[in-house]
Length: 124
Image 1 (cartoon, rainbow, N blue to C red):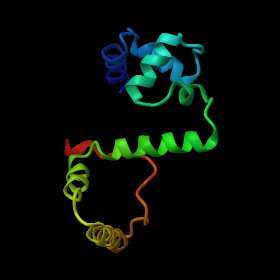
Image 2 (cartoon, rainbow, N blue to C red):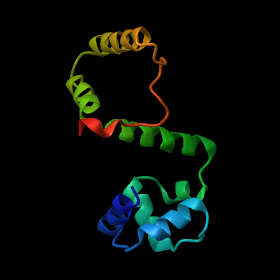
Image 3 (tube, helix red, strand yellow):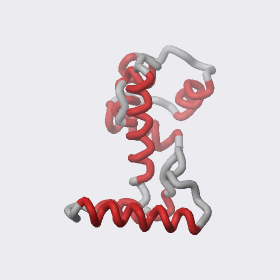
């Protein structure tokens, strides 16, 4: 995962960073990354820099986390296919699809809402 992040940070933000340094940041063994690295990480993860710094209000942070969970779920091609096929359908049909999916989740003893962390990537 760290190699994917370091490559993405370089590609999206033009900043070179080692996997080891990212690991140290994540584990708290290093602090105070450069503003350039923060901007590159934020760009890579598609979040505001303030989210990485903990500077967002609770409602703002919750909104960002919801978007991140959504994006993670959309990495699964099957989930994406279901979502995209519902585009353009009338709202009442979309509501029916939501009900059907909820019934499947209940029959499979899954929670009513999807898990907090996203994306089974096996379908890519």
